[in-house]
Image (spheres, rainbow, N blue to C red):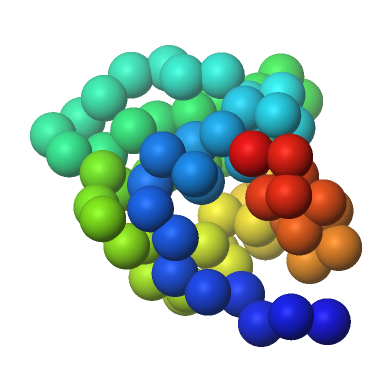
Amino acid sequence: MPAIRAVHYSTLVRVFELDGWTWHHTSGDHLVYVKVGFKRPIVIPKWDEVPVFIIQNNLRTAGLTRDRYFELLARA
C-alpha cells in the first residue's frame, strides 16, 4: 500500500466531500467540515501542503480507512 503523503488542501477537501462531509464554516485559515452522525468536525488548514499527521487525524475522526482514502483520492 502506498504511503500517505502531504497534499494540497483543495485535494483533501475533495476527498472528504466525496465521502459526504459538508463545509460548515471557516475559522481563520481553517475549513471546518461536518457530517450527520459524527460528533466531531474535521478541520482542514488552507495550506499548500497539509502534513501527514493532520491527514491521519482527520481520517481517524472521519472513520475512513487507508484503502477508502486512496480510493477517494484517486477520484478527487
